Amino acid sequence: MPKPPHRLELYEAAVQEPLAEVALLDRIYRRGRRSADPPMLLREDFAGAGALSQAWAMSDPDRQAMAVDHHGPTVRWGDRRRAHEDVHRVVGDVLETSGPKVDLVAALNFSAFVFHRRQDMVRYLRACRRRLRPRGVVVMDLFGGPGARRVQTQTRR
Image 1 (spheres, rainbow, N blue to C red):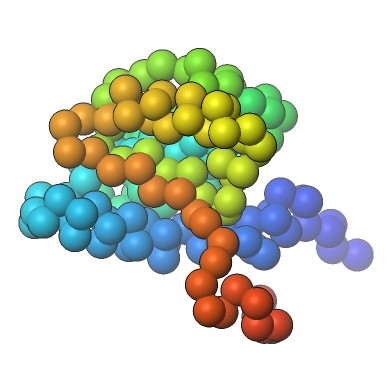
Image 2 (image 1 turned 180 degrees about the vertical axis):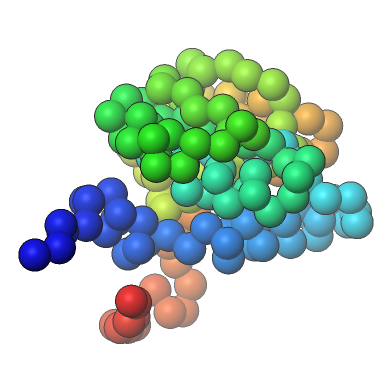
């Protein structure tokens, strides 16, 4: 009998599509800056196992990523599963963890909604701003729009 998939593999398959996310982040960055220059350094906050950071680093030999998450076992699982020399994984609080200034900060899968109080969200956004290079971009998932209330079905392998 085959071994069942790890719960984090199931999570990633259900909610993430790293290659599409890399393309989207690249497009958002270039449009927001009105520049053809590609973003090179990504900080993935609330990174979990760092699937986006891995895809980012693999999308261009000059790209690097920093994946930050507070849950050590998940970060270590991601590192064992997909270690890459251009991905720096950090176990820490996204509000407190420092690092180099980046082109993009990504907080995807609605993860920034961990901040329930206005002052906490403002503190997070200020921390993001301090981490950005000039004209850098913060990208966060927000739920809304006309399709948000429509029941939909997705099929995945």
